[in-house]
Length: 173
Image 1: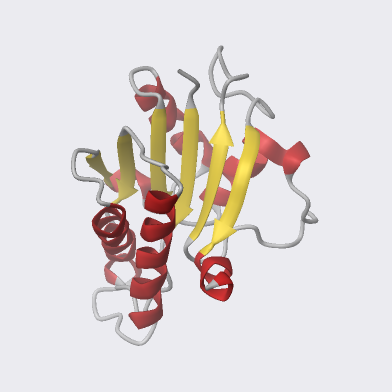
Image 2: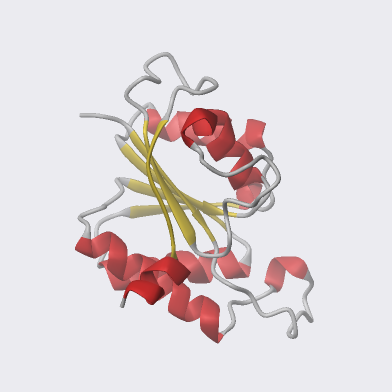
């Protein structure tokens, strides 16, 4: 089976309710809706990860839970990782590689700028945006084919299958 990585940035968060600081910032109503849209879209398109790696920051946890509910990922294992909170590229590569050693389809839910750095590292040649424009608005999902990454996650070994945001999905309906 072909290895595949799905990269999902958390939904829109609530900047007004930050009593516990950035780590405890929850999703706002739009972020809740975004996560549900992405989950429904994944279910409709038959995208089912074998494992989900998620940051433990509140907005990422809530995004993961909403996506799992909407997509009906009943048997998909969620691995909560403190290290994914604002993780840099090196940390992301290490954690994802460990899962890909045993699983074929991995979904990682986390934060920018690390997720965008990861996508650029794997698929820069497939990306149509300029280096200065952001790829990962909130609740954006990238699906990456890793069939050329048989020796590990190396620069440009991935092939972008699709990049879709909850806003795009919402505009289509």
